[in-house]
Image 1 (cartoon, rainbow, N blue to C red):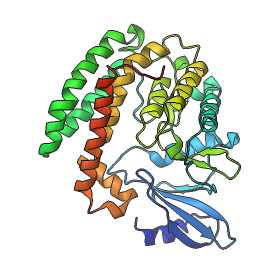
Image 2: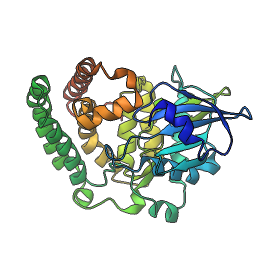
Image 3: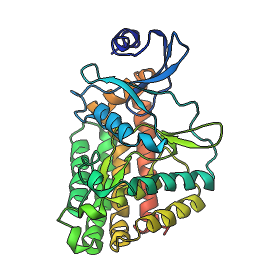
Length: 336
């Protein structure tokens, strides 16, 4: 859907007459717009990636998550949507992603996670799994292995050299580490429902808006669903869109382990999974080498269309930095 078409199509299901539609800077893989109506009311319009490129039901995930969490008043309210058009309207939240992260921001993130955990079990257990949920050691291994194999099919000499000399050797070490350290009960068998939690999945301050009073609202819930808390914890620590101080990472780790303290195997799963999630993020950094990954990036940021080679070089460097950190820390997490 072009920017011009968005206004025309959005009007078919917008509850008010639209005066203007302004595209916002790219966020992840979806295009976002500020919609102004004739009553001077603002909405956020999202145009999701074509499901022929990415079959995950991002729109339904986000709309359902916002409906589920509406009473918390920490996420935007879903206003209207059209699955065929792949467009959705949300309440407009006045604010920007927080700049300098403080302990108060970490406290708010932890508070949100605690509220998610407190949603009744019967609701949580009936909710779908998060996008690319990892509910066993074997599932995590398979996901990382699949990402490596997808990249190994790409005809790019520099990428293949990096996979051969950096990713593959580290992955062999990591697979052994997982096998040696993962709790036997959940290595091959899916984690018990009682130990899973609802997770925003792509969770962090890059997907939050800070209002004038300092309160955070959490946005972009396209991957929301049930998952192992380990994935939520590690993704927050590894996410490349956040630049957290060591003290904040320690504060986060301490806080989430307290929230999920009844899970006696959580720390063991976390220790076993730590380097695998690092590698998973290194491989995600390389999505721009994949045709579908690049198409999603251009959907969100059309201005990058002629910058693919430069973007790939930047992503290779980021992936290399992650691998160096994992090796330097001897596969252990330094924040617990």
